[in-house]
Amino acid sequence: MIPAFLEGLAQAGLPCSWIVLVPAVLVGVATRRMGPVAGYLGSVAIFTWVAVSGWLSPPVWVAGLSLLAGAVTWWRWGPGSSQTALVGTGVAWAWQPCVGAELGKALNLAQQDPLGALPGLAAFMIGVTLVGLAIGAGIRLLMERRRVAAPRWVAPGVVGVLGLLMVSGLYGQVASIMARWSTVIWG
Amino acid sequence: MRDAGYVRRVLIGAALILLVAACGDAAGGSVATDDPVVEGDSAEVTSTTTSIPPVEELPDLGPAPRLIGLDGWLQTDISSLDDLRGRVVVVHFWTFGCYNCKNTLPNLETLYAEHADDDFEIVGVHSPEFSYEEDPEAISAAAEDLGVTWPIALDTRKKSFFAWQGSPAYWPRTFVLDRDGIIRFDHIGEGAYEGLNRTVASLLG
Image (cartoon, rainbow over all chains, first blue to last red; front, side, top):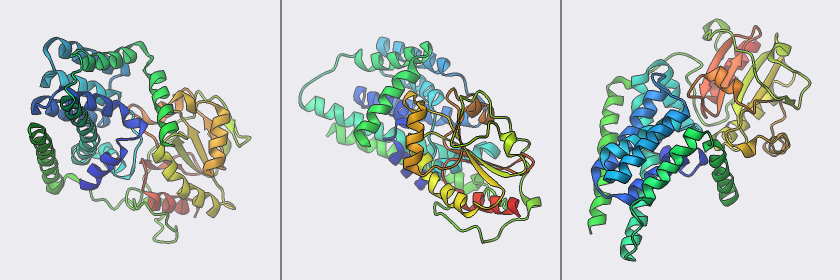
């Protein structure tokens, strides 16, 4: 459990985790309320588990539709828990993991005992997601101190663009460019 | 102050979720097994000399699928897994930009060197996650940097990646095939090096 959580924290910086991390940062920037945070965190953990257990693993364009639905409702009604849960569901379905030792234990276990894999997988995903939420909260704090406010469409706009990229099939190319930058920056 | 409260609530919430999950774990969520393939997930590169299981104790996970939709091979003259029938083969799905894949390579290097004179081969199926990993020249350069000297199958369109794993599919993933092309070991992610090494040693007799 704790090793999986720590591995999640450590793996948050890898390109494979960006699709989880970026929306988490946006949620952290957009709201300090617990409901939306729990909606994102819970849906990422649960729907990742549903996918790796082999019960429901839709193609990436379906993940994109979920992100789009989350983005539109977020833009219209603000970042509520249902909206962030929709975003988290899309993220969970789009995630293509690079697997370390602890996540590997959970994924191998999921092949035989899906329920038994839930704690390790949830701990890993919580680790990755918390990093994004913390970065987002930090950005929001800075913005508040400097009395800067981003337009309310920015966060759902970014989520919507991610969704559109997935639906259109262009997501892979954009993710590749992001990953390339990451390797240039981090080595 | 409100932000400090927010961070505190997030951390408490995460801790509660972890606690609940830990309770589930303690209540019997984890699977203890005597399966020699699943056990032994130490991150250390280990010797194959300890407790090699008899072949009949290794799981039979069915015949390996073919490698399909390849764009070619690097560092070899073979053109399919059929060319390796009669040998014990490790099939390793990886991509050179993947941090976790790189972490599995030292053990494979050791294993490759250890069984250089045996009927043993490693096939690295390179299934790129990102487009910059698709260039064969970049793959060759990375292979040289990373010490990958075994045959590399170019699975640029990830046809084999999904044919072998279904969806979702993972990097890295390691299979061991016996001399008849039956899968006798399957592991997702880093780790299980001891199980991998013991399986190879057992199959090589």
